[in-house]
Image (spheres, one colour):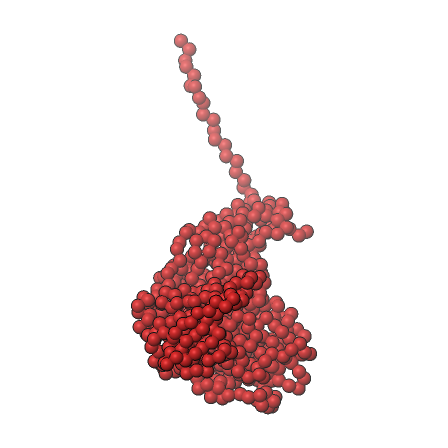
Length: 585
């Protein structure tokens, strides 16, 4: 019988092996697309009037580098403690995270960083440029004047700030109630500016004569006087006892001169001063009616403040305007004309007109007028289109031979009357004066244009000084540019606040502090749009191992001898901090 053969036979396993390195195969020669690291601009930074590097601030906070994050704010804004409380945070309206789940609480993080710096008495390490010979006079110690003096000091210039009132701060001290901005916060930030070399002279009012005499002592003057003159209603009866000015009312409260307000108070206006006056009157025990001639949605006051006013029981009567005030015994009888929306302007704000003869009367015990304000002196008025006048985004510069340069800023030039816009004005003025002193007026506009954050109009002092941010592209990262597969849904933190009942008992600050763990958790939600946070996706996904880590500021580089230009690194970058371009011959 024949022997059986095995059904299978084993063959030797042969594995080809090269004894030569593959480094000689320069696969990069196949490339027709070139990936590169290109940090871009986040939409929140572009929307911030002071141009803060918000994506980087959030990244540093998430890493626990609180001092570095705080100093990053100070490079662009000297008031993180103030703005973390009173800024209306337009940055958050442009946050890409809004399209994913909820916006980042940017202002809450800014306040946390300022509170942390205060708690641990941190000293900021920004270095001044070498001292310059030119001197600048700053008129007004409000946010624009103090910001101008701060940035001038950073650029090496000596400045003197002249303030008519006995304490510095302008609207920050006299126009914003304690429940929004406690005085100790403002005092700390002003003291830091003084330690930095800003000289403030209080109880020193300045007249038109000063401008003529200044050329003997100063090379430039910054006018940051603000709008401190309240506008009248121009109706019969507004001079009656019991009718008060909203700004003066707020100043008295800030001085500790708390007026007795019992009964019903009518506040006329729809801006921030009107809302602050109404909310202050509620805290003094009054019932408050706020009368506004347009719709609630048209109010120039910040929306969040309006919402809290409603929470606190303030009644808003929209589309009504006072036409007469009469005195009856100890009361004021206000005649209100009904208004109607005739049409809307391109921004959606109502254009109104009287609705026939529809009128009604309300009886109140006090009336506060807060319908707007203007410059207190006519010599604050802006110059017309004359030779030597340069109109910039946030200020107006006038230069003439053998006279000090004159810069108008703050409320005198800002289209939006806010603290952060005032800061932007002061910073732009300091940069413009530096260019004027060094290069002359011809290059001011082109030099500042190169310092725009994204498409502007915000300016960056870090870019102006040639810091790392100067390498960043002006291209703004949109939500569609991000790779959101790497992010998880997470709700935003809720701002802790005093309960409504607690708010109405005093002028104590409403918004409460948050701890480090909450701040880190919230900052970790940030997409860090456009900047590299060292996530290493580019290295992990590179099929050619062409991404090499090193010690340069970027932390890595691409070895183009082996990069085939597949673009995987660009696609897998969560934050759009890379770009893919056609290879140049």
